[in-house]
Amino acid sequence: MDIEQIIMNIIIYSGDARSYMYEALSKAREGKYDEINGLIKQANDAIGKAHDIQTSMLQKEAEGEALKVSILFVHAQDQLMTTISEKNLITEMIEMTKDINALSNK
Image (cartoon, rainbow, N blue to C red; front, side):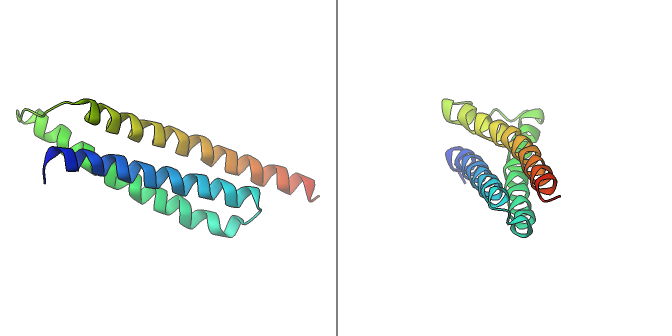
C-alpha cells in the first residue's frame, strides 16, 4: 500500500469515529441511552485502527526509514488529534445530558 493510501486510512478512520460520536450525542439528546455504548465502542475501534497506523509509521521512522511528510499527512494527524479531543468532549456532554435528564425526572 502506498503512503497516500495509508494516510487516507487515518483520515477515514478518524472521520468514522467522529461520526459515531456525534451520533451517540444525538442519541443522548433523544434519551436513547441504550444505543450509545455501541456507538462509542465503534468510535473507539476506529480510533484504534487510525492510531495503529500512526504508531506503525512512527516505528518505521524511529527505525531509520525516511517517511514522506506531506500536507496530507499533516492533515491526517490533525484529523486524528481533533477526533480524539472531540470524543473526550462528547463523552462528557453525554454524561452531562444523562445527569440533567436524571435531575429533571426526580
